[in-house]
Image (cartoon, rainbow over all chains, first blue to last red; front, side):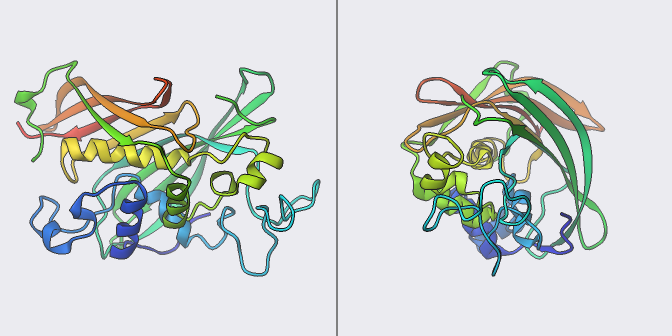
Length: 164
Length: 140
């Protein structure tokens, strides 16, 4: 799930900042951004997650001509018991996310990612059922090969719907 | 606009309202911008009948993104060096969220002043939905 080319683009940052309710003009006004300490439109702190847009294999995006597990005529577009295809990693939720910023990416950067699996562990859920945690480490490097952001995500696979 | 170490003390807090009455449309907006189209966040029929949840719920990363805005508004642009969270409860349409950063430590690393925060985001029932930490570079 590595991304060969994640261009940091102004419109994408504008839309992303809007979606998280962040009105800071550094994310949409180049003239304003030029006068700030970073000196340019930079990526908001959680923007690296949007590299999914540039991952051709990303499982949580419907793909042209392929089945999709969301609803249409039926509550799901994938037959029960079928494995593979249809997208999704059903039953997996996001448990943790950590970012380390070596610098903040700015518009014009073109990043690449390398993905390494991390630890895996198990826990008993509060309402029973096994919870299986697995960690993924993603390194985002710039066009000079310099490490820009290190991200560590933890996913949890549940045997039944998680409750709060 | 950046914070000054000389003006900070351990235990100081900064809070911001992230959202009131979270709308389903914002979940759609976040799905489109982030590229995470998991139907659990936008497709009520799938989420109720197939996944078994009472309704769609927010992407954890939307809550983290909103919490990040509280942090960057506080510490200044480009000042975060670390930001990490655990998602501790689900966020549902209609929720109100408030986030708080608490100064945990002031320190220096290679001549750079840093401040460590604990970060907590809670809903209208005071249930913690996100728990984490952050570090920012601050002025002397």
